Length: 211
Image 1 (tube, rainbow, N blue to C red):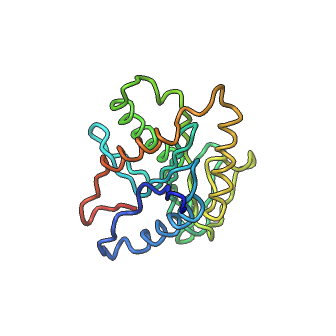
Image 2 (cartoon, rainbow, N blue to C red; image 1 turned 90 degrees about the vertical axis):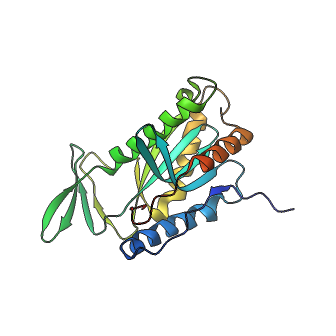
């Protein structure tokens, strides 16, 4: 008997905006990685390209992984080439012979994660339920990206695409080892949550950047 596929949501159909072709290809690559590693998993469930309304804002989650101890939000950073992270947390990219400041993708990922949590907090019957779960983020860079870390070392919230599976599994193991009780999210509860998020998903209008 075939094991169930644990990909709750694939990427929305691509509607052919030429400006978004490269970004969509990057989204497809990471979605492929996640499908390859988790499509028959009983421990991890995946939603790709999730857009849900939270108050007046929209949480745009590139990829969401649900596991027994919480949620892991993956954000793709599209910048390629040379990237430098300074001691004070600023992100810089090398372009046209000069360093240009980027918004911090880690901060952006946490904003999206907190928007998602605010929606879930409003909908769950057991108030404070999601406060007891881990809410993590992982920024995923293109494998060709040349990244220069500060002297303090690399950040656990950042990895390249080829490292995604190992980094996710490491974080899941960390959560399990630090947990004071068994995972709060059973497979059935993750299924319920996944189905709710699929229903809450709103595909972006044509011409809006979804990637």
